[in-house]
Length: 221
Image (tube, rainbow, N blue to C red; front, side, top):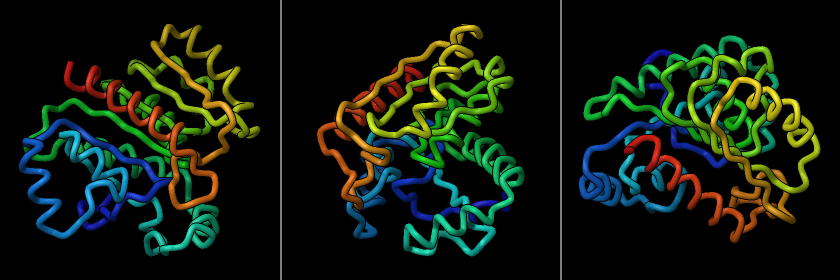
């Protein structure tokens, strides 16, 4: 990670790492003074809940998010995953050190970012909470390192991700990790992404409410 120059607007399928705030009123003023819609993306929505948000772009080494999902998927396949994982661990440390933070750190991620959220739970011992949306499980031999509580969201029809859950859940139980997991009936992978036909407004709303309640407990409690 080479500092704030790598930060880009958070996208529906990326990870957002965030910590506790300056005031909500100040965040609203800053966001709206730039003409930005507060509900436009995950980072803005979190900011308006009173969190400081840092949204690293995993594709920065390849020129950044190209503005198109199909092109982005092709670029993800070209990433050096080991280096990318280390970049996100560095991003967590960077986020925690931002001015005005309480030092408490949480992570939420979607799709690939959901897998990163699971990974960071194994790599950041003092993480306060992690929320993976339909994310791939981390290596099972690393689950015992998880200290943070988890809130996991799954789509109903998502064979690849859901197949990884039973062994992951067994490892979480064996390690004594606190977790809640929810599967949303009738949904498909990416149900929170309102730019695709898979978007499910009711499921997305409920999952988001649960996510904010979880972070209010773990980061503000």
